[in-house]
Amino acid sequence: MLTTLEDTETTMTVRDVSNEVVAREYTVPLPDVPSDDVKRVYLSLIHVHLPLLAEADMIDYDSKRGVIEDTDLEDIRSLLSTIAADELSFEPAR
Image (cartoon, rainbow, N blue to C red; front, side, top):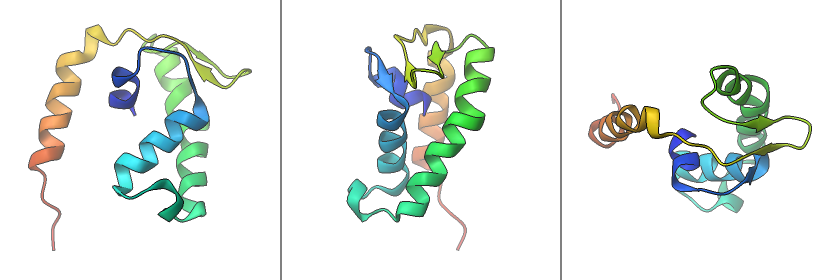
């Protein structure tokens, strides 16, 4: 989710962030993702991830409006790079 926010320098709605996360997670077009999975990601964002990131002052999240404002992720850019590199080298167990 943070890489989604990092890639966008504008205000995003929670729905937009959720759709981006689903698209990255499933690597298929959004209409092809089961609606229960889309709902799970959305609810997880609004109830867990976004409030925690806002509390840690990593994002500006307005829960009443359902938006994430311009977010400066400069402080965690190296962490995001490490995570992205790990995701590329990760091979699931079979």
